Image 1 (tube, rainbow, N blue to C red):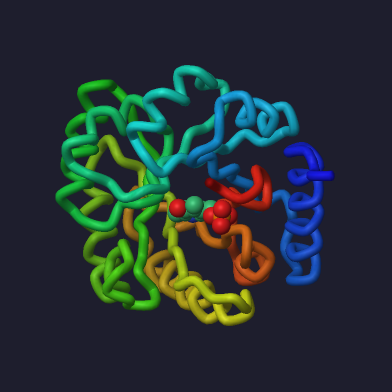
Image 2: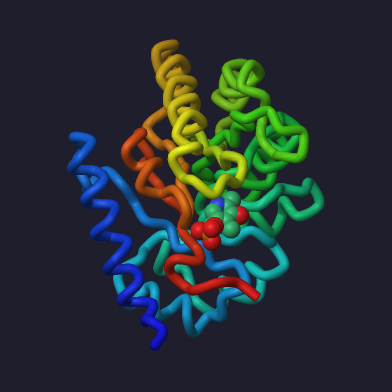
Length: 230
Ligand SMILES: *Cc1c(COP(=O)(O)O)cnc(C)c1O
């Protein structure tokens, strides 16, 4: 028998707590994001009923249908690739953007957020592995990008996000999580005005426990909550 969304969330929450405790962290410092791409509003509501307050979407088109259906009583996080021509929807639909990796997108989002009197929380996505197929800023460009974003009044920088290469053994993802944390520490030490580096968005179904051990504050989990995607 397949397990319910609520059972999956209870199980993941326990695993997050155990990973936090064994690495000397406060479990309260870690939020579970339910990643909802391809998931129906009805199943998303099951996750909300089970206590999830943080929801992630990858595609603007899908979000435009589902976010109004589910409602804004929860936080919506954009985790997918950004496109300039979708910025106007992104600023209306989402509270957080995890996938900011270039200044052009930051300028466009800032301008549009200003028109809606909104301040968006943003994370810079970092391509820690350097794979050419991946989104995310090159780590060596991130400090300059952070400074540029810090000057934009309608974006509030909260930290960094990464997606390591896919590996079967989650232990192999650990070096990428460590690298993101070190980059975060380096930028935090520069004390750039208006910049918080409190958040590390890292860890998915296969590797969220390792990510928590290495400092994740937001883990983005899809399949372990909702089952395999079509
Ligand atoms: C799909 C996705 C996730 C969730 O992946 P699962 O393996 O289903 O947990 C997390 N982050 C991003 C950016 C994604 O696109």
